[in-house]
Image (tube, rainbow, N blue to C red; front, side, top):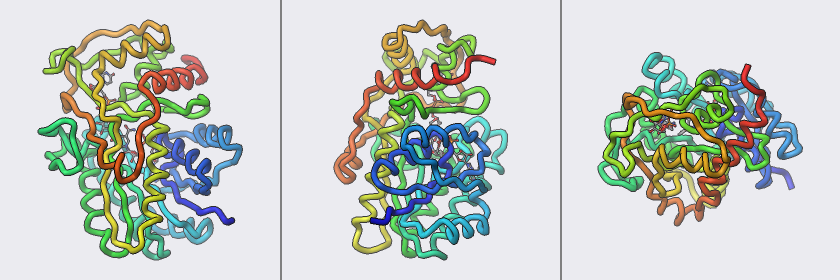
Length: 341
Ligand code: NAD
Ligand code: WQD
């Protein structure tokens, strides 16, 4: 049987690479496109170590229509597209708003246009819980209104979702997946998060501090209206997230017609505070984390976690990994990386 080929933009990055692995395991043939602007090719080796197959990797920029068109011509036909390629740093987006709008919006439009040219309908988009801002009700479900985005990055995700909502009626079948806070690594420790420079996100900051690459972790605020005063998030294992993409693709493939648009939260439904995550890390790894309390970080939401009922029911997807497993896997991955310096 010929395998179905799936274009995975941004597949050299953290979530895209884990999803490429799950696509192979589910019998698909991922074709990865990435310009390596925010990653290095190391994760591609990890995909090969886990799957035993060298990934089909095409280096290039998804904002370039001609490049994408040549990939569709030479590496297709594709039965679907998963679009991970985007810039994702909230802080950097405040410094470089135009770069973020250009990259995140242009790449989406170029990918959709080329899909149209080649008659490809099925599309899965990496959205984010950031589209909600600080929701009025927690756990937050998909019908919660968007608050004004706190950052240009958040605004790009809101705009992309709006583009998809409008464009799906022209013959697409689309799912937007709103990720909460991905953490962890592949259980084999051959794949994980590899941030360039100083990490923005809590997960890699914890593991790099534990590994001695960072002097100490600062907890951004302990005076929030939460039980221990630190912010609350919905941390989700990256492999669970990756598996949800396969479920989403299978769901689209089962649709009889076109013009589908669905949005799903991808979270565990469990809120965990920053201090609880630190304690859990220390407990499962036995490593003492040097940390201190600092001021609040501008733009941080006090607490947010998902209502995952819709994705549990419609995509039949539930998280399999615990937070402890996510932390252990992240730590196993970190320990395999080159030491400081
Ligand atoms: P990542 O930075 O590890 O991966 C993104 C990849 O896209 C990188 O390899 C980068 O080089 C590539 N890329 C960026 N612009 C490109 C372009 N124009 N052409 C080709 N390649 C390009 O990020 P990630 O954590 O894997 O995130 C994947 C997606 O999920 C992004 O869209 C991000 O906004 C979204 N998301 C991430 C999180 C998170 O916390 N990691 C949460 C919610 C949503
Ligand atoms: C989590 C918590 C920090 C680092 C961001 C984006 C969101 C999505 C996921 C892409 C917060 C605290 C962090 C540190 C800390 N990405 N923290 N010390 O801010 O929830 O979400 O990534 O779509 O859009 O906004 O994730 O990992 O940065 O922070 O205390 O050194 O950890 O204040 O409460 P965040 P994060």
